[in-house]
Image (cartoon, rainbow, N blue to C red):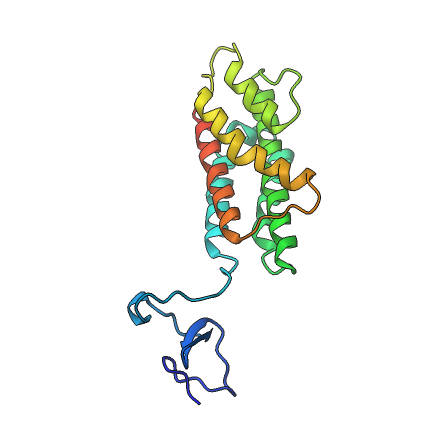
Length: 197
């Protein structure tokens, strides 16, 4: 029996979710919302998204254009960590892939903040994501502005606390790809704020 939308057969299988015989299956053809029945929503897991790679490339550009680039070996290591976020897209099971994406992305941010605060002489005794953000909020160093307290609290809640949960709580995993996308978006916002201090 042919697909209602794409004309594919069971012997010529489809690879993207699509409506067929009243049920969702996979199809090569891109389905637009106007093709979907009213009030219908496809029941499939979000794919490992190409937007991850685009977001990572944007973050890498921020790193390359910052003072962290003055430490080329560390900067290269940070860039490699960020690249791993989309290199692990095919890792199975999904919860392992998502956990690795949290690990690599936040490890890159951790190293970036460490070098950034060290470069500006406001690192103090800090050695973790939360402590770096605190130092950037409370420092008295000339030539660099303080990070807004409200923004520090926001990044603590949406980046640091989530990272700590997944890294330190047994059995805790991101539940879907949306969590990874939101984490990367928050990281990008955080870097934009910090490189502009």
